[in-house]
Length: 200
Image (cartoon, rainbow, N blue to C red; front, top):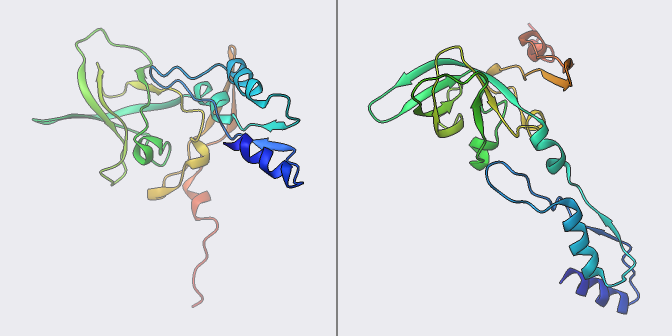
């Protein structure tokens, strides 16, 4: 349909030179099979049939999503009659996609335990019932365990907030055996720095 519109406009003397196709490529969070970039481009080029168009893509998520991991620590375990909860130190202000979009995120223990798993909801410490990172995950956990929320490289920091007066997390770049802190953790003092008292 889009190419048909390009042709109709060309028939009226309006030449379209650029075609913005947006993101286009998906990301593998669980068991999805997004197309490979080369296959995607080939399929589009076949449909152009020689039209002289510059194609524009914004494939950011497909480039960075699986390059990022959110590390979080288990603060408490809460067992109830109907549900087990792992309360972690990361929250919806750090990674809002699960709470906002019900996005499924792969969560793994950094050091897996040799114990029987339980089914947990992984929730943050914010005073919201929607503050969760994952639901119904079979994990063997203990307080203090470090968890990796995988595929968190896209829409993590840029969608994060200071909700509940929480400083945004640090960002660390891993290059082989080297690590570089590329963004330090925010402090409470920085959160208040832009505020002013009313005149007396």
